[in-house]
Image (cartoon, rainbow, N blue to C red; front, side, top):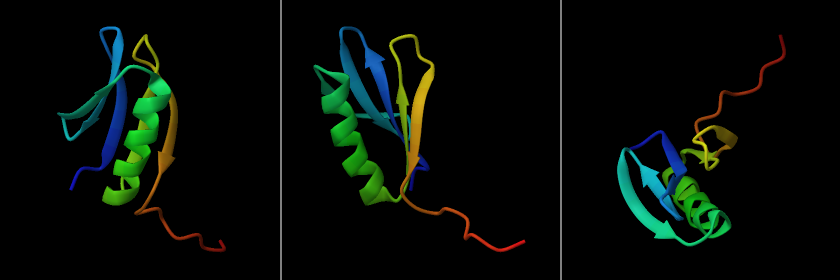
Length: 71
C-alpha cells in the first residue's frame, strides 16, 4: 500500500500518481484532486496536492493518523 496520492502537473494537464505510478490524467487541477481524494480515501493514504511549480499546496490525511492523547 502506498502512503500518499499526489496531484502533480503533467504538461498542460494534471496527473494523479500513487507510489510513483500514474493513475490518471485530467484537464484541470480540480478534476485531478477530486479523483485523487477518492483514491486516497480508498487507500487510507495521504493526499498531496502540488502547484504548477511543483511546491506542495496542501495535504490531507485519510488514515493512519496518530491517536490523540492527553499529555
